[in-house]
Amino acid sequence: MPDLTFTASGSSENPTKLNIQTREFKFVVDEPVALGGTDHGPNPVEYVLGSLAGCLNVVGHVVAKEMDMPLNGITISIEGDLDPARFLGMSDEVRAGYKEIRVGITPDSSADEATKAKWLESVEDRCPVSDNLKNPTNVAIALA
Image (cartoon, rainbow, N blue to C red):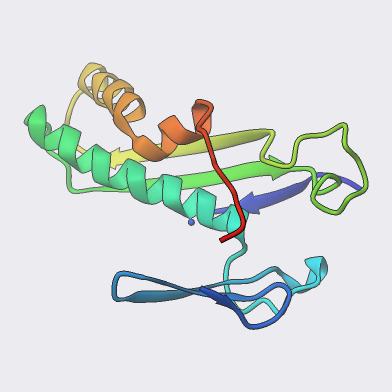
């Protein structure tokens, strides 16, 4: 099966749809019809992309403020390539997660290119979601 490219970030209602609540927020995780879902919400790996975008946005604004860099907003585009073979039980030889995630960040700023480059370096270094994606993180899964 070819790689799938995704673009972008409770209790089960059915095998693919999960209703989630966090704090006072509720959201749905589902799979697209092509992967057996009902397409009532983003799938888990799309939420990963959305989480990364959201984190980069927050950190980007924090860093810009610290640097006194003018920032009117940030445009972020993210895509990742995922081979679904392991998820579908078709292969143990490929990883289950993204092979690569590509991020494009465009700050709406009048700052010079050197300042923007320094800003981006700090944003990348300080983003918790990016850190979790780039570095091994212990995940303990157990029956509750």
